[in-house]
Length: 317
Picture 1 (cartoon, rainbow, N blue to C red):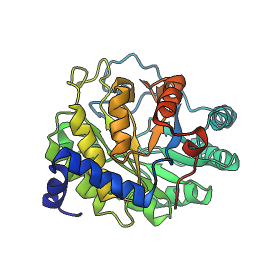
Picture 2: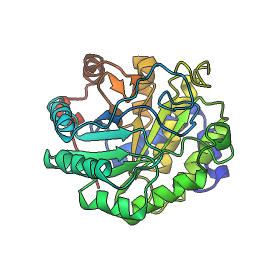
Picture 3: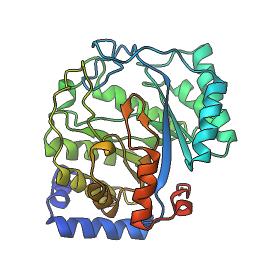
Picture 4: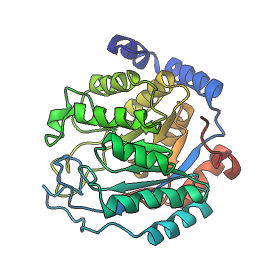
């Protein structure tokens, strides 16, 4: 699947047929027992110069989020060890930067990557735009994946962000790929986009070579003080349709059920797993947004009949 028409044809299949097709692709390429648990930590919070209309960390908006400086390596080591003990196999670190500057703080992030990898965990960071040199340094430190979401379609993008371009984002993804780091890139649903916009985003990702190692599907978490604070919730079945379409388009990639799970019923989450989602973030916070409690996720996986050991399987190449 490469073109918008091809994506539309799949997305608009009768829902039972779409889910069954996605389930077959999922079973053939990954398997239902392999649900990866990831933990996401904000290592530098607030004060970002970007004007992303969904983000409480933007310096353009008056939000309740307080600025916090870059954590120390020891603080990250402690949090990563705790995450591993709770069953996480990937530890993700996010810094509210437009683009990291070379110097002591970037050196510290590189060391954080080494520490996480030294614990036997996958390491992912999201730091904004990267140069080729920075990507190579992260690769040399052992970085598993770099998260840089496209967020939405090229045509809808200017309605959400004006301080950087769509091609800026794609340039970073290409720099990451050139360095040999896996790409983690997806989008956010519920920012005023159409269903076609979501499919156009998947089309952009389908043009990447190699394809993304993981595709996060986020639902907008409206944040007080941001322009999208009053955005309506996304239709549940549209979420399921997009998850299923992403699974069919990227049969060997992780499809991450990311932000917004705390607003989803157990039944909706199960339907998303059936449609091909095979990764979640756990822990009570995603950067600055709430997330389901760990006990709730444990109960969900037990109800699904998925064992803890199966959930802790590391991702396939």
